[in-house]
Structure formats: structure tokens, C-alpha cells
Image (tube, rainbow, N blue to C red; front, side, top):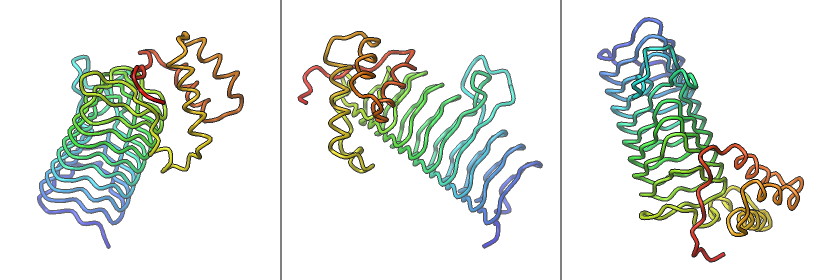
Length: 266
């Protein structure tokens, strides 16, 4: 298979296109864009300057990737949108490029971003992230690896979501969500437990899951300050890499941690 570019597509000078790439009708690709091997770009897609797309990505109809950020402070600075390999970006997704704050918006590898999602400037998504339809992600959000986010979810700017978390549909994450959490509640968004099914699917043994539950009780149930909870975790789980991920995340929180629902039965 050779590269195929529809005659109605507009490709500006300076675009680098890999091998076996397909570009559909009426797609517009601005200058200073790199598209990796074996990508498929659908019809009516807009790809803005400074975009880097890794190999084997599929971008569907009417997506807008790497256009300028929706930030009133933006003054035309040279910034990037970096998209890893083997990503699926569905219809009408918008991914804005970075601002001077971070310099780029970044999507990892093996992500699924479903229709009508918006990912704002300076966001960072890890690997194997699945986002359902109509998410609205404000600027500077950080999402870890192996995260699943349901549909119609607005995420507050500067919020962080830890590895292996599950964010339920129609929730409103407004504080940092610790790794392994399951988040639910339309009226009052809270952590409702650990993401048991997700952890099982990623090979977490029963013992590892029980340790994470014990760590959650220390953070959320023992009425400790965050600093004291971190100290207790460090002394209770020496050398436990799962709990270290929790500790490192909590230490890096500037917005504060989302709390656990009070009536959750452990």
C-alpha cells in the first residue's frame, strides 16, 4: 500500500508525511506538521501547525487537531500538539495545541478518544486512556496511564487523574483523583471505591487490591492530615510500588485530593 492523498485535500508546504498514509477529501493540513507511517486521516479533518502524529493513528471525519488554544493570553507563540502511536480519534474531536506554560498538548500511545470530546491546551494524557463521547477537558489537565473516563464529563482545569482510575459518566472531577479510584455521583462527585474490575483486567492480584484498599482507609477514613497519612503509608507499606504510586501522586497534588463518599461500604 502506498500513500494516498485525495485531490481535494489541502497540504501546505513543509508537511512531512510517512509511508502508507491515507488522507481523505477536503482535509486541511497546515505547515510544520508531521504524520507518522500508516496513519489514516478521514475527510474534513483540520490539522494545525506544530502537530506531531505518531504511526498507525486513525483520525475520523471533522476532527480538529492542533489548532490554537482557547486561551485569551495566547499570542501566537510556537507551541506543539504531540500525539503518540496507535491512537483512535473519532468524529468532531478537538485537541488544542499548547501555550507557553507547558509548550505542548500531549497524547500518549494506544488511546481511544470518542466523538465530540474536547481536550484543551497543555493537557497531558498517558498511555491506554479511553475517553467516552462529549468529554470537556479544560486546560492543563493531567491524565495518567490506563484511565477510563465516561461520557459527558467536564474536568476542571489543572486537575490530575491518577493511573488506573475510572471516572463514571456525567460526573464532575474538580479535585485530583488518586490512582486506582472509581469516581461516581452526578449530584456529588466522590470516590466510591477502588477500580476493582479495571485492576483485575490489568493483572492486579487480590493481595495487591487489598493493600490498595488498606491504603485508601488510611488516606480517607482515619481523619489524618494528608502529611500524616503519607507518613503512615510510607511506614506501613515499605517497598510496595503500588502504594508508592499513591504516595507520589498525593505529594504532587496542588488542588487537593477528591474525597471518598462517606457511606461507601468497604
